[in-house]
Image 1 (cartoon, helix red, strand yellow):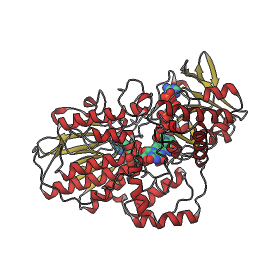
Image 2 (cartoon, protein in one colour):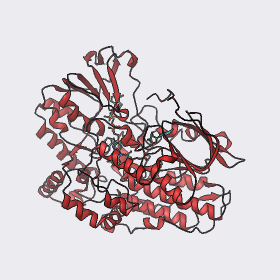
Image 3 (cartoon, helix red, strand yellow):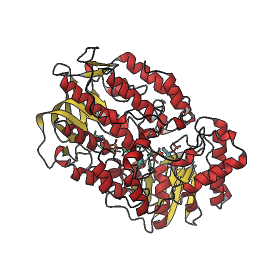
Image 4 (cartoon, helix red, strand yellow):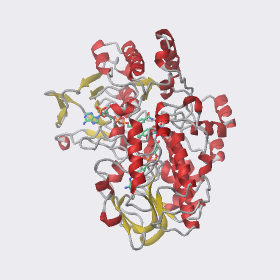
Length: 581
Ligand code: FAD
Ligand code: NAP
C-alpha cells in the first residue's frame, strides 16, 4: 500500500552519524540482531517503519490473527530465562499476545533506546571508497554503517491489487496486513472479503460474527486443517518448560524447524483403510502436523491425491450447500500453497448471511462507489477487506533503493528473480546481510528458528571480521550462481514447486516465477552455513581476498545439531546430493 506519506518527525534527524551496523526492521529478526550485536560491543541503529516492535504482529491486527505453529515453539530460543519466564495462554496464541511477547523482549533486553520508530528506510548506497553503507530515511536521517542488515521480513509488503476505480469506493477499505490499530467495528455492516488465503481463513469466521452480511470473493480455494486451538494446559506447559533445551534441539533437527509427530511411511504403502485411519487421527490432532501423516505427501502426486481427496471430503462433510462446497474444494496439490489452519472457517459458509462469489473465471472488474463488480454484477458492501497477501520475500527489498558496487541496484539485479548466496547476501552488495533472505529456508521453516540461525551466523561473521580487521565481505559470483541453481534444482523434487503460490511469486502479476525459499530442509541448510563458516567463509571474499583466516566460531556451533535421520525427506536427500559448489 502507499507508504509515501511522510509521518511527522518527533525527533531531530540523525545526520553524519556512523554506526557499525544499521538494521532495517524491528520484528523478531531486527530485535534479535540488535541484541546480538550489542552483546559483541558493536554500535547499531535500528530503523522501523512501524510505531513499535513486533513486525508481522504489529501490522497484522485483523480479527482472528494468530500463529499456526504452536506458541511453545514459535518463540525465541536464545534465552533459557526468557523461555522459562514467559507464559503463553493458548496453544496457538492470538496476535495481541504475540505482540505483548515482542514488547516484553524489547523491554527485558532494553532494546528500544537503539530503535527509531515511525522511520522508513528509503535508500541504502554502498560507498566503494569509504567501504561503508550510506542509509537514508523518510525522516531525514542520513547515516553511515559498515554493515547494513535487512531485517525487513518475508511477508511485510502488503499486496493491494490495483482494482480498477479503487479510489471511487466510498466505503471503508482495509488490508489485513495493515489493519487499523483501533480495530474495526463491523457490527451491522455489509462486508466483502477478497481472498481466501491464511489471513482470510482466520478472519472470516470472526468477522462473520459481527457483520450484517459477509460476501467472500474467491479466486482460488484453499485447503485448511482445523487448528484445534485450546487454552494451554498448565501441566503441559510445566513439562515442556522442564525439557525446553531438548525440545529446541529436536526442533532444529527437523526439516521445518519445528517438532511434531511424523510418520515417515509412504502413503501408498498403506492400505486405503490404514490411510483413512491415519488421516482421521492426524485431523483430530489438527494443525500443520496433519501433513506429517505420511512421509511422501509433498513428493509423490499419487500420495498427495489421497490426502487431497480426504481434505475435500472434509469440506463436503461440513458445508451444507453442495454448490458452495464444490466451489470451496481445491483441485490442486494439498499443501502446495502454505497450508491454512482454521477455526470454524468452512462452518461459516452455513450461516445464512455469508455467501461465496467465484471469481476464478471472471475476476473483479472494478470497484464502484458502493461495492464490487464481477461478471457484470455489482455486490454492494460497506467495507472491503483485502486479504490479498504480500509481495512475498522480495517486496520489502524492492521498496528500498539499494545500490551496490558500480551503481547496480538490487532490484535491477533481481529482475529475473532473487540471487543470493545462502540467502545471506548478494554479490555486488558487500556487507549487506539479509535475515531470512530468498534462497534460505525462511518461510518453509518455523521462522523464529530460521531468524535466530541467520542472526547468529551474521554476528559470528561480523565478530570474525573485527578479529582480522577485515572491512568487507561479499560472495563470489560462482558460488552465488551455484547456490541459486541448487535452490532451484532442489525445489523441483517437491510438489510445492508446481502451483501458483507466493512461494514462486505467482500471486502478484508481473513478478518473475522463481521458487524463492530453500526447500532442502532446515538442518541441511544449517550444516551448509556452518561448513561455509568453518572453512574460512568459503565462497565469500573478505576485503576482496579469497584466502580467509579460520574463524573463531562464537555461537553458530549451537546450530550444529545432528539431522533427525528418521525423517529425512526426498528434498533433504536431493539437497545432500547437490553440493554447494
Ligand atoms: P517482520 O515481522 O515482517 O518484520 C519486518 C519489519 O521490517 C516490519 O516491522 C516492517 O515495518 C519493517 N520494515 C520493512 N521495510 C522497512 C523499511 N524500508 N524501513 C523501515 N522498516 C521496514 N511464521 C511462522 O513461522 N509461524 C507462524 O505462525 C506465522 N504466522 C504468521 C501470520 C501472519 C499473519 C503473517 C503475515 C506471517 C506469519 N508468519 C509466521 C511469518 C512471520 O512473518 C514470521 O514468523 C516473523 O514474524 C518474521 O519476522 P521478521 O522480523 O523477519 O519480519
Ligand atoms: P495469501 O496466502 O497470498 O492469500 C491471498 C489471497 O488473496 C489468495 O486467495 C489470492 O488468490 C487472493 N488474491 C490476491 N490477489 C487477488 C486479486 N487481484 N483478486 C482476487 N483475489 C486475489 O496471503 P495471506 O492470506 O495474507 O497469507 C500469506 C502468508 O502469511 C501465509 O501463507 C502464511 O505464511 C502467513 N500467514 C500465516 C497465518 C497463520 O495462520 N499464522 C495467517 C496469515 C498469514 P490466489 O490464491 O488465486 O492467488
